[in-house]
Amino acid sequence: MTSRQEPEAGRPQERPLARLPGHHNALCVTPHPPPRQPAPWPSPSPWPPCPQPLSPAHPDHLHEGNAISTRSFIARPTGTGYEGIYCHYDGYPDHQLPLLLGAARYRFGGDLDALRRHLIDGPHDWKNLGMDLLDRAPDNVRENLDPHGDRGPSAPFDNVFNMDGTPAKPMPVTDANADAMGLEWGYVLHDHGIEVIALTWYDIGPIVPWDTDPLSRISGTPSLWESNRPAPIQAPATPLKITKPVAPAPAPARSRITR
Image 1 (tube, rainbow, N blue to C red):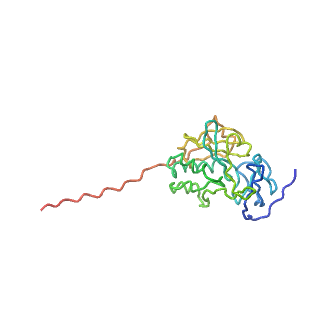
Image 2 (cartoon, rainbow, N blue to C red):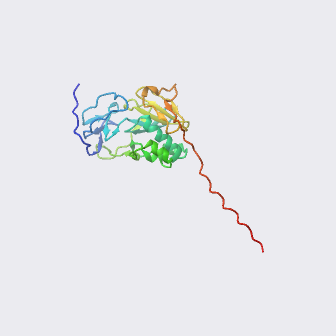
Image 3 (cartoon, one colour):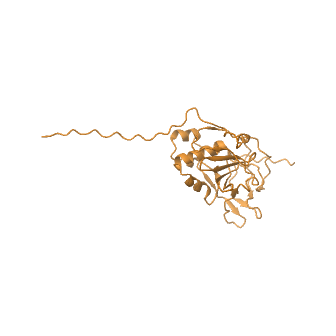
């Protein structure tokens, strides 16, 4: 086993990624990333030296700043499985689920078809999901999920090009190829809830209902997300209260003066 070279300190300038010929989903990462940060759970393999083509069967982590490339997908159910789109960074449940639950509840007002179209049918993969999905959410929800105000909006993964210089099309993710792509987490947007799949352990997962509080405590331990047991989620001590705006009080009636 060869020892890897530690990259120089400091964040490198982001450079475009190139998709290699003969590898439908392979990405060639040219810069050395910054020093590795600890992942939410042990990484399945050592970090390879760069440059290194990331083939569909290569599960190694990449890093950009403080973001960790816990690779995931967002999908809609099909007749026999699911089909969706790739998301590069922050794929663990305690990051993705609050955004997806909050987006359905607040930004899209329960319109799940609109949510699916927004996340899955675009012309690009996702670099990460972000706080724009919580537009129209109450201030206390946004403050609890982003206490330091440093989480940005969703970012498209749009700096990926084919070898001929043309923009690469999104990676199609299905139940037939998700394992081979080395993805770690999957989120299937069913009508009755979000199926969370810990792909390093299981092929299917438990359903998280859409009315789950986005401020719930959510486990990121893959082995706990077994399909035949409840999702490892703990509701907050003080659940969210959904109240309707109070209508303004009617103006007092004027007394009628007769002469």
